[in-house]
Length: 340
Image (cartoon, rainbow, N blue to C red):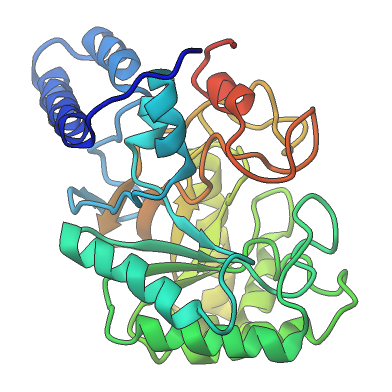
């Protein structure tokens, strides 16, 4: 597709107007004609609107979430506006191997400064534990335990005082406990929790999804790494299980934590790619669709339905996808579109 040059200021204004226009339309659907118009608006604005209904004892709020201007989807949307619905949606920033122990404090600080200037809530994913997913789709991570701990110290130093920041800690690492052979994974996770717990940020330890660990085992592992010291845990990161079923799973984990003496763990759910429900394979599944728009919740155990995964970015070298980066076929599939 031929690349067109768009003035950044004009484009930002267009995106702003479209986001606000969609918000007005969605409010209208709640009071005027209901489901039929809501479906039309969902198509026009790029995905289902977030519900105004309470969930897990929490009430949705309209606190803005930060859109990182360096998202790969934004660069892709400048060339192909079909990707606008992804580029215009707040989602987490992943701190991986591009950030080192020497640069971590500056890397995180720059991102937090951008969020503060935008008066929006920053969402960070820390994904750099050695061997990450035991050398499968997302191999990599810090070179060793020492480097990882130094990196975490830098991240924690930058996060101090940022009590509105939301941090998802090491997707898949705790569910994979015992599988990876490099270093003391449990010790590294405990160290990270201890360091991050002093920052004031809201930290969520990832515990996988409903098909990975049963609630009893999930609760035991969360207690082992000190979930009582932080906000709680995350579920469904990069997976595709439905919002309702993952909320039920999270509630069952909370029930088991309560039995272990941890009565008030909160949780967040990744809804970035769960619009079509479970998929037979989590690596670049062709039938997955975008989930509902991300939103924060308050008052109960649920703190947010979030786009933790960055939709449109590859899961790894499977189904013809690249090892990393934004992959147009995956993004178009999530949007229910076809290439080129």
